[in-house]
Length: 223
Image (cartoon, rainbow, N blue to C red; front, side):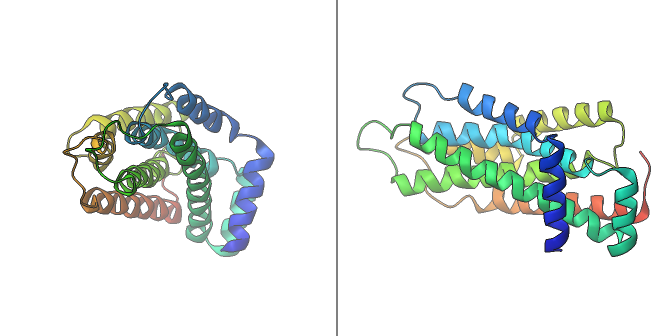
């Protein structure tokens, strides 16, 4: 598996197809950084923007391998294992972006005003958890919006954008819950309990998305 992941990383970097989603993410992060923005707001914004961008990155990784090369790798190590390596590669790339963006937002943001606010550790925890949830759900979404489940780029892009928006605004979504916790973590009456349920929901979505994608890769389902 490590060799397959290194192969996928080298393939991604050489193709430069990672540039559009990464540049879009960087633009959104910088554009959302307003003067005097507090820690929770910045980290929540980072988590929200991470969702569609990691979905795009995941699809980019899953579609970056030429057909003949994909067939050779699948014949050598099995289609399921080859697809899992690509998914792990996308998760690694997304995690690097999440860490860099999270540190950037924290450094350029300001602490809450006044003395009546939760500890900074709690604010960082809620914001970091929201970023992790955005990463996990975005990777899951990209997995099901890529071949062999969705081969048509237009269908995949519309699905990715529509579902990302729905997950960001739907009250029952783990992403929405985590971002709301991050946005309100600066206030004096903020909850200081660990957002375990949204994180559990994100993990379940990742497991379900990857399971569907791996099963489709093994069976070679068409669009």
